[in-house]
Length: 456
Image (cartoon, rainbow, N blue to C red; front, side, top):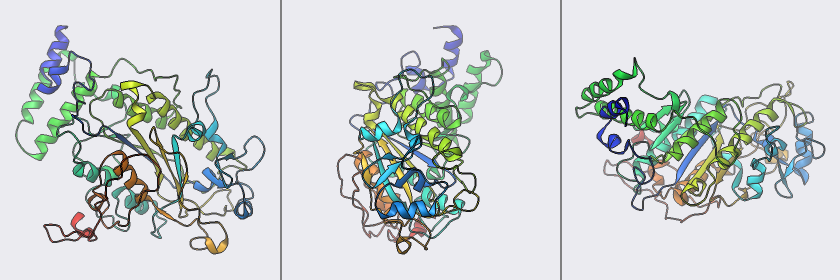
């Protein structure tokens, strides 16, 4: 070991230094003694995804209503941009079956993953709250309390707080990739926020100063308080990530991430998963879905390009993590994709769509069941919400609850989604059905489950 590296390790925490000379793997920080090792990645599409052009009717009377409402921007049934069949009734946007040009043997596309039952689609999903504000709707969803924005913690934070099947000490339980931390992780003091592992380091001044800097900072955070504990955990995370990055990254299995922040952020999550240092929850944002104008005609244009970036990113992420044996990360990976609301059925005068209601959710996993789930409400005028939008027939919390119970082994729904009751699995992923803890239980503080004030 070089003197500079020895000096670096001197400033690390005792736990990190003990393993600094070895490969970080499940033996080091992932030996969970039978605890749940599944990883949940939450992807939020900011701006209101037009779900009716991602999953659209291709047969029956609804096809006529769809074509009449979207004469220009609708996805056609024939030609180069024809809808891809999901079943006899519904189709998928053609951009979900594309790959980068010049890539040689193409990796699996998102449509391939659907056909391989690794992608489940939930139609007419969302919140039964009549709200078309981006800020409010995103807040309701991410906090897990529709109708209430004053909740002090996000639903992912409450999942981590109530999960009884996690090791007591995980140095990197939650990762928020990007410039901001999602509201779903509000109140998560042990969540790490980063954009790129290679730049997540303590690099003030010459390298020779680093050991002394680390020792000094750890001395500053040696007291016992929430602030000192948070600082110490931050230093642990910096040490771990810095020791596990810096040599570049080559995705596995020929995976090709799209250029741009979305592909880069997914690649960051994949890198952190492969370090095996305890990651259980990650969040990624992908914006640009507020398509009020210039959405694109007949399956092309801006929206198509954006869907292509989404689809390629998801497919590359799955391909990168798809291995065998201990490297088969997809066997414990579940990715949930959602947006704050859908768009209006009818296109507007600017070849775009305005804020709507019901939408589509996607669940990608090595344990997905595949297929289309939920109840399609229909597009006849009398079947629309507010005479204009796709109705919501599946509460988004039902999908998240199934992932939490069947994959994460956490059935504490009354704490994670206070006020939500009547859960039954939709069947989007495989797993064990624990009895949901979602009843009207009186807590020691005297509040009932349905009283959201205990979370504000």
